[in-house]
Length: 257
Image 1 (tube, rainbow, N blue to C red):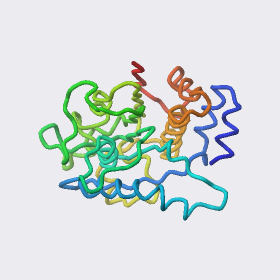
Image 2: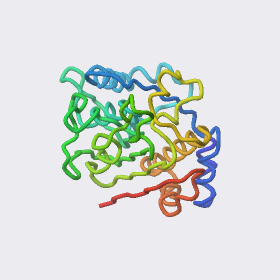
Image 3: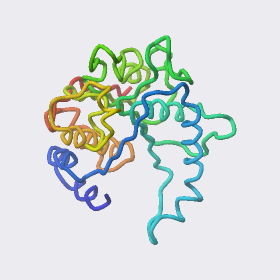
Image 4: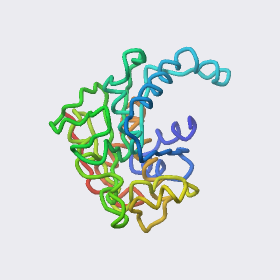
């Protein structure tokens, strides 16, 4: 990753963003669980991993590679987005509170339950604007088809009032919201993802690799901005000209103050 990122920093903004959307720039693998009664165990597990990093991570890194934990990012997809936001809000149990701060937070089509009255515990959505008390910048990536049913038998995988739109609504500036219009909730998964899972959600009709490159490119552009690399030019370019992405981004919105 280091070489491509450094190379992109030297490019003009539009060229740099075109580069981050190319295949191979960010290897991403998503895992999802659509059925759960609570997120507490996953939040605590994520907190334990975070607390392991200062002492545990150096032991598994190659010689000569040092981790800068002052620039730590947290991301999650679907229910994992709820996990990430919950952890950043300090909703882990008292025995597993995190000892590190997060410099950036990303929700990839986050979902907080099946509806407003049936939030996944812990219920973090308040339905009040800018109610999330995050000190770090936040990127929320949504899908245009996530709120649609695949068929009459199954509910939407990312229902209104508990999906990306509400997560963004409750973020404080600086925060960003980009929706990949023509794709569904699980369209960024690997092609070999279990069909038993992917068949439950509305899917786009276009190439899934385009979706993966789009999501990865948005993440790279945001993280480079949030973590102080490249002056944020990639992210500014995407926000100013969403057509740089390989598929339609709509809406694209943000609040800086």
